[in-house]
Image (cartoon, rainbow, N blue to C red):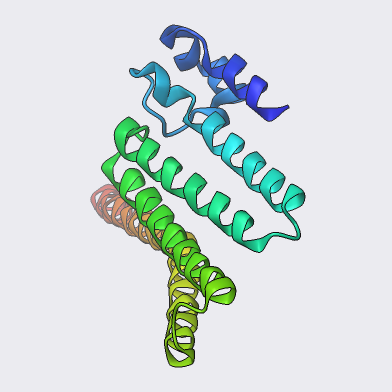
Amino acid sequence: MAVPLIVFVTNRPNETLLDPVYKKRWGIFYEGMRLDDKPSRFFQSISVLRYLLFGLILVFFYYIPLIQISGIFFCSVAYLVIMIFMRPFVTKKDFFLALLSELMTTLVTFFFLVLTLDENYNLVTVDTRVQIGWFIIVLIILVVLKSIALVVYPAVRGLMKLFASKQKQEESEEDSNAPTRKNDGELKTNVNP
């Protein structure tokens, strides 16, 4: 249901997409995406379709873990390739962060695939399985830390800017009040003699 809505909303002329009223209502579907490239507008639809495909694979192949993890791995690789060729994000920073996140997720999925293959075909030793398991744990911790950092850093930076602007505002108020008081004192002094 979300995919037709996203396609409907983003399949508009640039003038409509940049209109403030339209952007306020529907901008969440294309915010941060390149509007000059038609396929980039539909990148969110591709993302939603990928998650829908993940769900279908997990439900319909519930008793066949090898097919589950293989399907998810190949969907992740396809999504990564689409992201690299489309370059749908406006800023390089957003593209890099999305690419890093997808690379880490695809790498975790790859190692899960290796462990699943090993379960069926005994390809690696027990020590190698343990090392792969620890590597997966480290990658997942890195993904979580990266996600936390992406939430915390902008919040802290915003707070610092807020405090800096408040401090600047207070200093400017003090500076503007000081000359006024001095001039008031001079006027009183000049009026008395």
